[in-house]
Image (tube, rainbow, N blue to C red):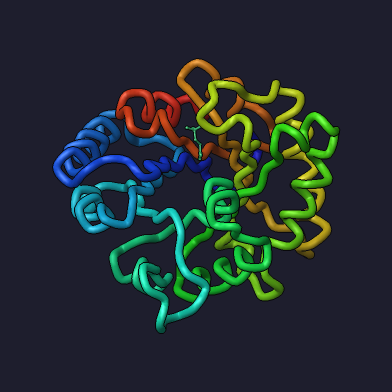
Length: 252
Ligand code: PGA
């Protein structure tokens, strides 16, 4: 891991946890992380929208930052059921995950829509974790790099704050499956992402590239030691305080 900024470990609770349990989980995380600090790692927690306030309160006195899992691309208006980026900022969010494959897949979110969301989120002062990743069929067809580069090119808006941008490489087939690419494969894709970013951003910006997809206590150290891996987006294991902190402590 070589990067000027601190590695980032983001927990994505997805559509899990009710209020009481969420409050307890966040408070347990704060206590456990306090025992671990000072650590040279940035921790972000992304609970479902219903828990942003509760978890935000629990994190208030800690160094752990609050993030959301999605936002709308418009500033405000007639969008029943949606949440704007400024609403997230208003709740104390500092980050938002955008373009997660579960949203690309279930809601037909296109690269173009994701780029609009990134623009809206950054305009509202949020840091954006932009997800890219190939399906199993695309991987089997040898198209991983091509797909990832194409998503990357189209999911970032023209007007962008690189310093507020984080990329997460998440192979779709690795998410929640217990399977991961091998170290060489992760390393290769991250290098391709880095090369694409270096072409796009001149002068070059050391924008963090996270890996996500079945990160566990067992594989975190090896994955986080890869040169172009600057942290992880953790789903299932982020619901377990000890596992999540142990993963974060694996950043060397
Ligand atoms: P997982 O999820 O760690 O449960 O595989 C990762 C993600 O979807 O961000």
